[in-house]
Length: 308
Ligand code: CUA
Image 1 (cartoon, rainbow, N blue to C red):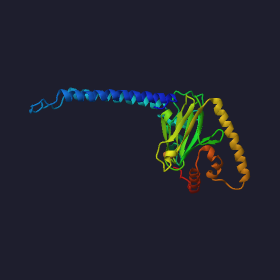
Image 2: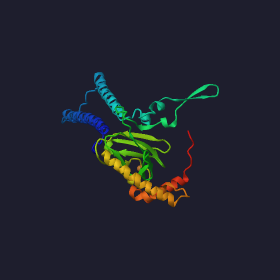
Image 3: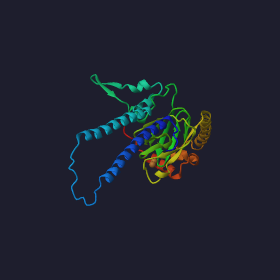
């Protein structure tokens, strides 16, 4: 197993080790019994008789049904609890870790025509993925980062500062909430060191929350076959000390604003495609020429998606 870089990862490893221990015990019990019986009851030389006609044994069948049933129930409860700790049971909670929690939790009622009441969920409520962990301190606002999966790169946008990056920087010990989108086909955002993975689906946003507790660099891998360069769709998650993270945000805010002003001065009259806009950052972001071409093609052919 790779290192566990969050409490969630430790929880998942605990569940995995528990299952592995049971499976290993059962393996030796079943295989050991098989070998002992095969030796003990093997045919003796010259013995041409039939074996005893054994047919059914109710107590035995009850026992070997009851034991796995109990094991499966224990595993179900245990894994359900781990999934809940990861925020998987209520992904929409992450829509409002702060003030708008209540607003998002009750349905919006609309009165139509002759007093007909229709309860409607706005599309934003139907979140997929892993939301805020239930034991998380609500006083600490999570760091929100928008993630866009495109063939073949992950683009991260920090809504608070407008910083755009090809790799993900987060401070240690602060909850992170990723709003995951896909620009073209289905991708999957996988953090092996955090034991979490979430599909990025075109037209259906998903969320993933985690709290890193270990400074370091960790791989971000696309775990869904998404085209010829799927294998190259990976980048790095940098978990940093708070001061280091703030420095990174500051450096990138200045750098990108300077470039942006220059770009506007040069191209004041014409709108840039995302590919053209990102061109100056391509090398820094680790985004290849084929990705920029994809972006340009994508924005050119983009048709508005009808509202559900
Ligand atoms: Cu994106 Cu594989």
